[in-house]
Amino acid sequence: MRSTRFHCSRRLPRALTRAVLTCATSAALLLGLVGSSQAATTQNLGTLGGLKYVRADSTLPETVGTRTGDYINAYCGSDWTATGGGAALAGDPSVSFVSGSDVGKYGVYGGGWHALQPDRKLSVYGICSKSPAVSTDKRYADFPFPPSTIGFTTGCAAGHVLGGGVETPYLDAHVGLTVPADGPDADKTPDDGWRGSGALLDVANSPILLIHYACTTGPQPTYRASTTQVPHSDQRTLKVTCQAPQHVSGGGASVSGPADEFHLAASRPFDGVDADQVPDDGWLATVSNDGTAPQTARVSAVCVG
Image (cartoon, rainbow, N blue to C red; front, side):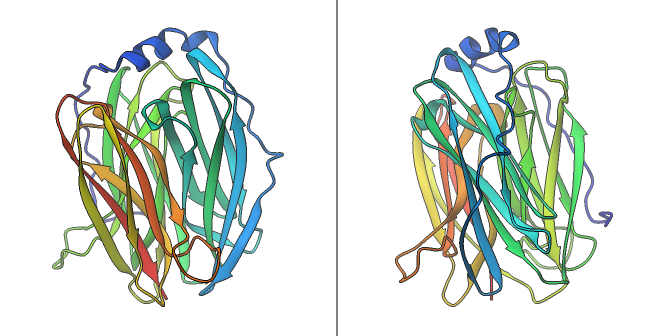
């Protein structure tokens, strides 16, 4: 579907000032991205409310003074469409970076990279639906010459947004914000599209930012959010919970500052304190504030059922 609700907008490039990124970027051209872990086995975590929750895991190798990354596929299945997805990196969140979650037909491709760490786990989550009311699409824009940032909003041509994701060059960039967005309609509900941004650190083979999103022509979901302050050079993990009997179909996080002054170490669905072990209860995000001033972080969840 083509979007008729939003116009693309760009933010002027900003210098990257983080010392760890400076160190990692200087060695980036000596590194190759670890091959896509297609062998990673997708785990079916359970099906609730017509949504299937899946996860695939990989291991990011040890890195000292450089960075290593990977991307893997959380496979929904040939009869399923991903409504939302996310990624999470274990280890020190200050040097762990989500670089993409590609929500689309059959599943979610997600990725990330880390610096100055031993072997750590990368997990990619997919939320899947068989509903004929669900469709997916994507939009892209070119990054300016690095180091640079870019952000834009795209939207559903009809219906309501169920979830989305942002994809950057997997080793050379990281996701900034990835959240549901309100369009130019009469209400203030963020049901019309998806907003994303990213920071490009180095020259990449495909220096583009892609926003992937899923829409439904069915009933309008509920959109929930929670905020907190993140001190400079610090990290916080935020959660927002769907109210029972609803289930999370997508989610993400945003920060008040520019995309090159923060990053996400995790953005994923989570399991709450109910009887099952399915991550259908809300959305979790781990935010690292890399700037010099406090910033407001916000985690968002799209809830259906």
